[in-house]
Amino acid sequence: MSRSSAPPVVAPTGVSARRRSQGSLQVGREVGVLRGLLWASPWLVGFIAFMAVPVGMSLYYSFTDYNLVQRPVFIGLENYERMITDDLFWKAVGNTVLYAAMSIPLCTVAALVIASLLNKPIMGVSIYRAAVFLPTLVPAVASAMVWLWLYNGDLGLINRILRPMLEPLGVTPPNWIGLRGSGDKFWAMPALVFMSVWSVGQSVVIYLAAMRDVPAALYEAAALDGMGPVAKFRHVTLPAISPVILFSVITSIINSSQIFGAPYIMTQGGPDRATYVYSMYLYDAAFVYDALGMGYASAMAWVQLVVIVLLTVLTLVMSRSLVYYRAA
Amino acid sequence: MSTAAPSTSANVSGPRRRRIGPGWARSIARHALLAAISIAFALPLIWMAATSLKPEVQAAAGGMSLLPDPPSKTVEYAAANYKAVLADPTVNFPLYMRNTILVATLSMAGMVFSSAVVAYGLSRLKWRGRGPVLALVLGTMMIPFPVIMLPQYLIFKELGWIGSLKPLWIPAWTGGAFSVFLLRQFFLTIPRELDEAAAVDGCSAWGTFWRVILPVSKPALAVVALLHFVYTWNDFLGPLIFVNHRDQFTLALGLQLYQSQAGNIEWSLLMAASTMVVAPVVIVFLAAQRFFVEGVSSQGLKE
Image (cartoon, rainbow over all chains, first blue to last red):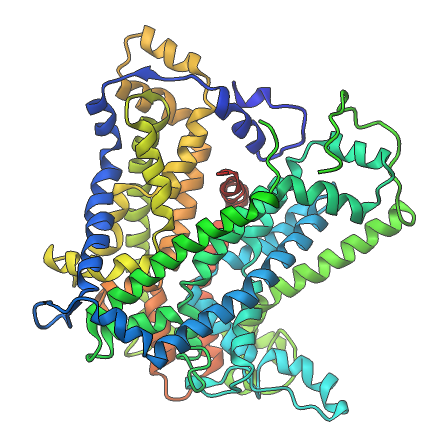
């Protein structure tokens, strides 16, 4: 099936043709296992050298006391036991969960709203889409610098805009994020969350492609049933793109659990550890706090891996009743 | 769900849908909303660039003008800022720019080539074990970088790569899960007749890959190349861990160094430095927007 034989559904990116062709496709010549493995060998070599071996190593180190200078000493489950009573560990876990719990719903809703606004044949769609998508390509370090400047208490653009609105009410806008971990303890985390909405463009583009893939016939049927735009979104669009939303949420969970650059650069985890997230503690344990070392950091990394896998499985299981899979 | 009624005709000229208000009013409202959202998303970058054009006194003064006062001196002020950044005695931006271009280019070349080879093996050749290998490729996307970054550091150290740029680009030559997946999906859409014709002409599997499949896959290869180029350009945690000498810094590390070592931040200079780091990405994006959008769109289709 070639790309040109795409079904009549509007799909400017050609993705629908691709998806539909997968199942029925029978291309390719038969080759032996060794030939096949040879073709896959670049990835397999990388997988073994830079992934499988490191995963195994970090599992082993997680059971050791190891600070890069001395050889690792096996200490059994001590690193894991230590985590249970480590207040800073739980603080970092709490902050990361808090960030994810605020950021993921906010970004998902924002992305869905923007994508559905764009999902109409209106002029200038590509310009709007470009404006929303471009921030996702900005290097994390550069966006940290830009937002440090925007959030600056005295001089930042955000407070320049807010001050004339809030001061007549007797409210002083907060010092969102100050330099070197100074600033408002309460507002630092919401500031990071709000900033994450800026990078929502990838989800917007993914949702938009999925929305354009929804068969027009479904909307026609909905119109015959007398549905308005909101009802159509609720009863046609959302169910039809739910597998894509699910995928995007799982990706967001994995990404949010690894947030590092923004807090590391902008707040250094402060003020008063209010934005000290899991990956920062892991980094500090490995490279900064000699008392903890690679062993403890590896144990933390493994806890993270297990939690991510469990969360992914849990999301998949829980969503079985919510996600609607169209027959191919 | 309640509405999944199969319709025999996909004819768009069916009965009119119910609408709220006249069409032109809804259209204007939609444009207004989208324009507001677009401006909000563009504003941080616009403000970054605007700040880089002003002398520090003006940047730190109030107001929201985008150009310095007087506007006729914009070029002069901007040039002073950018020159000051490039001439900074401790942060060697020209060198970091060179390093970043080198790493991003080598890394991109390897990623495209190796991922294409692997994707071909996983899509247009049939062999026992292909399914499990593909599952393994997809499964690795779940592994968080923190789990492997510390042992990777030790492995690179053992290989003698720490202290060079090698850790930042050699691993890309083994391909990447996402790129392999994206190219595989594309290869699956190429008509089988092409392979058969090549086979009749006596083309080997490699010849088919090199002379038939790759030439017709240029758009997909471009997507992988661009996404990986930007990924490498932007990467922060990788260089932070694997690079420990200033001669090997990338722009991302250099920008962070520039900000963290300054005793008293001069926002106009910091924004000029940020603009230099962001500008190449913006230019690449504007030149090849279609490829980015296609590449990212296809991410949602893993199911």
